[in-house]
Length: 220
Image 1 (cartoon, rainbow, N blue to C red):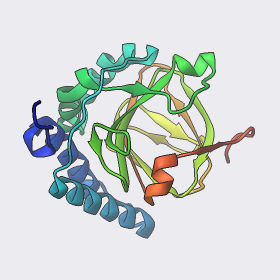
Image 2 (image 1 turned 90 degrees about the horizontal axis):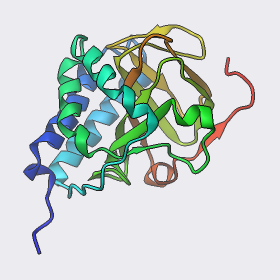
Image 3 (image 1 turned 60 degrees about the vertical axis):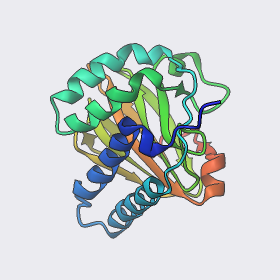
């Protein structure tokens, strides 16, 4: 029986974690103390994760309808500021497991989005105090208003354009920040797919459950 692969043995996954670390250092906090603190926490937990040299557990790849838009999203991202991030995702793309995150998804939404976890309680790179991944939205997607209990969330836009709560438009190189319990609704440009890298940090019990609260009313 072969020995399990560890992070030090799989350079593509180490480079992907480095892209998260480097972007969370380079992107501006805009003068926001909570965002700056979140960026530091994400970097510190990535550093701890890399030093721990965890196992890398590759599962069977899994696609979703929205992954038909992935090639376009990656192509668009190569021409933007996060090109090195895009290349790091491409290096592991063939083995990604795209998911919905809950059992029941409306028919319309099921064709419009999916996410892949890179590091976390269920990711290929196991970690209990941080989740890193990517989420792909098809053109015209409207993701309903929701909040995350006990989880601080951020997105780095790698390609396309998205709006949160109809308050501003975020293109490549933007950082979107959601503190715990913040209700947010995501809309996507009609013309192009959007690819976001995301980070969640929180207590292990919050990340292991990662329950979302949905709203029946539009977020304000």
